[in-house]
Length: 288
Ligand SMILES: Nc1nc2c(c(=O)[nH]1)N[C@@H](CN(C=O)c1ccc(C(=O)N[C@@H](CCC(=O)O)C(=O)O)cc1)CN2
Image (cartoon, rainbow, N blue to C red):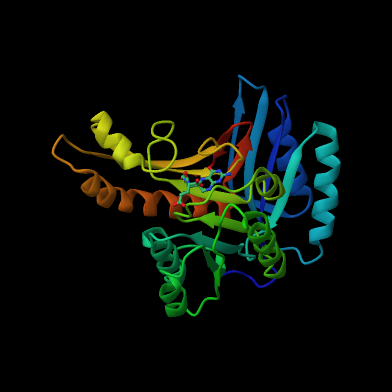
């Protein structure tokens, strides 16, 4: 039973690798009545960077969050860390974007409603009205933002207003089929996750199942990744695959792929919500 004064936090950090980082973090926590509940770390020998995630609880009411932040700031200066401290009782606010295919949206809404996804869904945005009924069925705001090459900048400005007004932490592209501009990607860097319906780096772009059918692959897949301006090139978070054979039509591949997409995206969003993903250049470190 959680003692009410017990607060739970997650610390994430990355820094140039060196001796003593884990000990320094552990000693700092011990000095602030911190009890480590879960700790994972790894060094990337190719980049010389070190990555760490520590989940800890503090049951000493005399230790404030500001005091913790102050202490970590000091440590961060010593080790040149990029770091974040998160309260575990604060759930990220998520805006889900979708076009016409609703399977990934449906899966996210159901898992969130079932308590299996630690997020709060702030609303649904779509460039079509096809899935408005699904947002309505969950009592969620639905924002219809049709996109043309003429109105794209204005619609993206409207999207950023929605993100601001609804205090959105994460945007999820749950089969949203419009390419986001470089400006939007920069403004939302590390805060947009997309599900691409192929096993990247194979079959980028639109219609990957038709590309897979034409190539005669024996495995199909789905890839959840952070969005960058370069289409389907962002840091990969999670991938799912399934075996297929020569008899499968593009339509059958599309149907089989829906489950892979839904599972990979929900898993990636869950890990992001638990602060288990750290960006490592063009890749990710995922402390599952
Ligand atoms: N900046 C980015 N924006 C988006 C990405 C991304 O990686 N970076 N991923 C896409 C999703 N996607 C594949 O996963 C994808 C979406 C759309 C297209 C595409 O060619 N779209 C056509 C229009 C298609 C239509 O209107 O139905 C286009 O934009 O000309 C390819 C891949 C989401 N956004």
